[in-house]
Amino acid sequence: MRALALLLLFLGLSLPVFSLPAAAAPPPAAPEEREVAAVFESARSALAQKRGAAVVPLLSRASVDKLEQVRGVARSGNDAGLAKLEPAEKFAAMGLRRYVSPADLRRMSLGELADHGMKNGWLGPNVIGSSGLGPVRVRGDRASAILMVDNRPALVPADFVREAGAWKIDLTGVFSFGSQMLKGFAAMSGKSDEAYIEDMLQKLPAKPALMHR
Image (cartoon, rainbow, N blue to C red; front, side, top):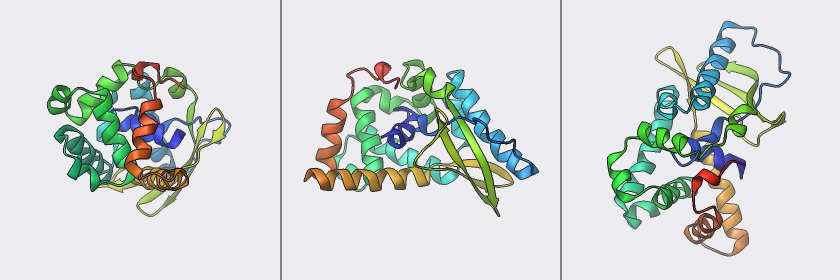
């Protein structure tokens, strides 16, 4: 479930998708690799300082579009819109509805939701402190690296894309992986995606501030 927890972070529910340690990995040698690593470190530093909104400009256009779609569905309260989302997006939208009041959802921008989540401790400091980036591989305008948490590789890599000459963090792969995972778990439980997600959210702490591990 760590990948889903990471996904939630940038959704304002628990933006921990970047929680992995740079352990003993050698420093990036090529200039492009250093640029990619610097973007990741900027995001991690902002989260450590509880500046969730500062991470949003570091995300790819596709990532921001997807997050805005999730926020829009969450704030609308429309189940028809929810049905059109992939499982990971449904999880995020349903989670936002659970932890953020309708009034705040209507009022807050994506950046404000991220700040709200950091302020309320939705991402524990232990997660940020134990995060890092492994070796970076650049291929044209895309790059990836192994994500590490407590010196162990995560199930999903950290993906990056170059847009207008600047490297951005790309969360689309995290959404896809999360959706595949949720579909599999829902199928094994014999429940629909929505029913499985609802059960999962009901088992989470009533106050996200308790979600530190």
